[in-house]
Each structure stands twice: as structure tokens, then as C-alpha cells.
Length: 308
Image 1 (spheres, rainbow, N blue to C red):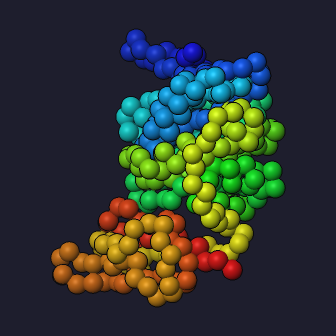
Image 2: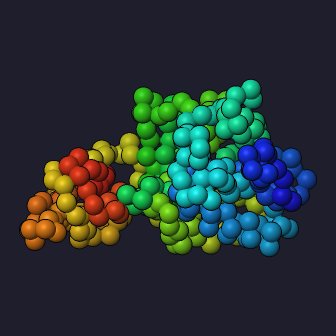
Image 3: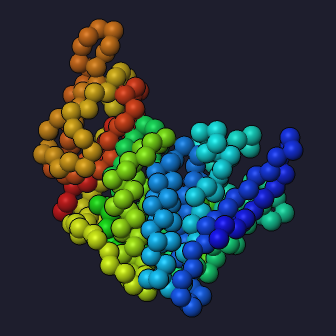
């Protein structure tokens, strides 16, 4: 069943509609929600929603409870390949929990927030921007870590990054839900404006594993358990460019490196010279890697996790 969560008139005889797909099996009234499309240039979650919806409808006999799938919280952004909400100059993930008496974008955010309240779990799927490629990871506020890390491990992602409270924006959907008592896990993976199919397939298997752990799903889950890294087990290094130029990577993302090993080069297309050898600052895992070649001094090139 498809339901409208929010709708509003647009200026030229059109309507904005934010919709969800509800898949219900068994007699349980508990809900599990998957949301994505908050940023219009982040498309990795679209494939996840397709695969998950298709699978659950084909295995409805193994389902107990309600699964709500929200593929496009910001449909105008997706339609226009825009990160924020077009014409409002707003990042939708900076206005939650919204305002029922505010502008249209705030009313939409408030309707989404209220619709999600009370769920057993919410998975908020994001991609990176066009500049960086991320391995599949769960990002958790340190204040919620004790509750959420065990659930995050069920998703079978490569990395669980626990953020200090000071770095977490209070106006995000995840923070608003978690502080209201509705647990929400943020998944970040891939690169902006693209779909990484193997990431999507693996995350769907992880979601099914979490559904099984929460007694929503009784079927079998085909998953290859991997060694998962939690950021508290070590340190995260940020590697920034010292020169402006064109970045030519020497590796793929998700690679263990030795200290001093080459990650890539920054070169001058005009002079035909190497401006900088970008090397790993430590023995560790590259879990973020520059995807967009043009860089400026200070641009983020990579994030490297060093295990204790």
C-alpha cells in the first residue's frame, strides 16, 4: 500500500507529494522504517528501497509487523539533482523536527518526523557527496552509542563511526528521532549522484538481518559476516591536500595501507609535474577516498582509521 505522508500545492498547478510504501505481514502492530532521499544528490538509497520492497513483498509470509519505506523525503531535490530543497535554499536535514506552523519545507519535515515517531527502528540512508566515496558505515552519536551500536552491527557494514556529541547537528532527522525515544541509525555509503550496486545488495542483507533480530522477519538471511570496525577501537586521521591540482588515485577505497604508502598523486595538468605524493599517515584502513579529481589546498583527500 502506498500512502501520502505530506502533500502541498506548488505554484503552477502541481503538487508536492512525499509518499511511503507500507508492507505488512502478520498481526504485530510494531513498525520498522527505512528512509532516504533527504538530499536530492544522494541516490544510493533508491536501489536499497527497490531491493528491500521487492524482497519483502515476495516473502510476505515470513514478515510480522509493518515495514514503511520512504524513498524520497525530498522529491523536488531528487527531480532537480539538488542536494537541498529547490527554491528554499535549505538543507532538509537541518530543519527537523520541523514546524507545523512554519514554511512549507518546515511543515513537510514536521509531517515526516511525526509519521516516524514510535517506530521500533528507523534506518536513515545517505550517500556521500560527489567529491568523496565512502565505504558502507553507520554513524552514531556518542550519547546513543550504548543503545545503537549493537543494532548497527546487525547491519553488517564495514565501519561504525561514533561521533562526539559536539559534532552532531541537533536539527538532523536522526538526532531529532533519537532524542525523542525513536531509535535511528544513519547509514552513509558510496558517492553522490551514483548507485553502487554491491553496496546496496549488502545493506539490504544487513537490514534483513536486523529485521530478524527484532522479530520482524522469520526467513533465512544469506549474509557473509565480516570483521566490523568500531571507531572507538582506534583513531581517525583526516588527510587534506597541500596543493591545488588534479588528484589521481593509486588505490581503491576500503584498503589497508602501511604508513607512507601511496594513496595517490596531485598533479599539474599544465606543467606536467607531480605537485604532491599523497601518502597514508599511518598503518590503517582508508574508508573515505576522494572521488572528484579537482582539488584545492585543504580539500579532504581521505580518511584513514588506525587500529589501536
